[in-house]
Length: 85
Image (cartoon, rainbow, N blue to C red):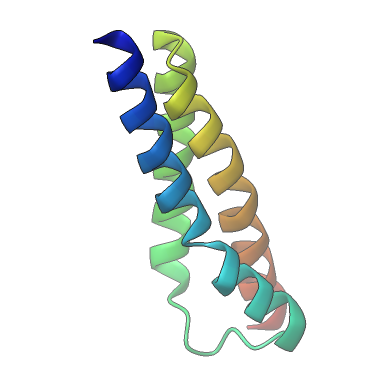
């Protein structure tokens, strides 16, 4: 059962993390952040950071990997939003 649980967690982590790739690529390529909410990305980046800490405290691979990758994408988008606003 733990293998099934870990597999589901890793699959969910992959799906939710990969959801940010198109947005990050679009923002990086176009430098257009006009349609993005600054407050949402600040809140989201803080939340993902806290999930990463939580995953580290639990030693949960799926939570750690997903949030470590997601925070990179979210931070890039947030930085570009701040830079181009």
